[in-house]
Image 1 (cartoon, one colour):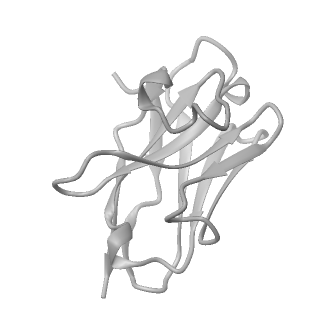
Image 2 (cartoon, helix red, strand yellow; image 1 turned 45 degrees about the horizontal axis):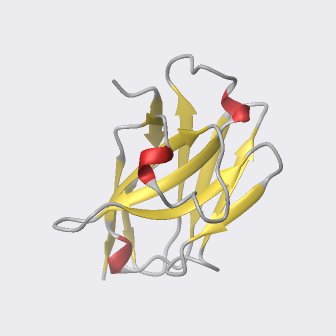
Length: 129
């Protein structure tokens, strides 16, 4: 059962932008802002991969090389929401995007899905030529 919910996906042309949001749909074991929130994506026929992460305790962010400079992860503690701002989108960014919560991440661990305790069901992002 998903404790997080993603929103903001849709269809966009290459070069365009989208902003995804991630919020808790149910109470988590700790406060939402105690968690690091990771973003992952899964394209058809491919494995799910890490995209970016924010460690809300200190604001530290991490990104996959494929999105560095184009995607930004941020948080709004007042709204208990984490965002994934995606710019200069490419057709290869087409995927279902998931957010997940992990109470503790590091520069080496944030990519590993099994460390995340809570997941959303995902939101579809489609980038057309």
